[in-house]
Length: 66
Image 1 (cartoon, rainbow, N blue to C red):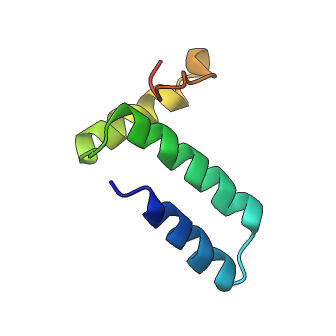
Image 2 (image 1 turned 135 degrees about the horizontal axis):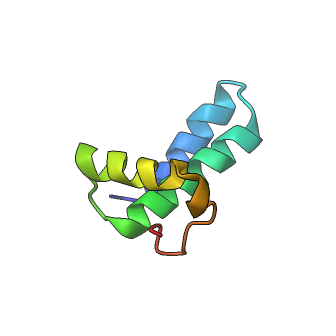
């Protein structure tokens, strides 16, 4: 994944007049996902989301996985 695309996403988001805080949160989450898997597929993304949703895993490691 070309992480430079995240800045393009930010630019498009803000150009559309949407909240900067929201896109910052989305980009932070995507960076964590990509840290765990450079080219995540649907299964990897679902597994990542599941581990983030569990109450006992309220903090995600820097690698993006518990």
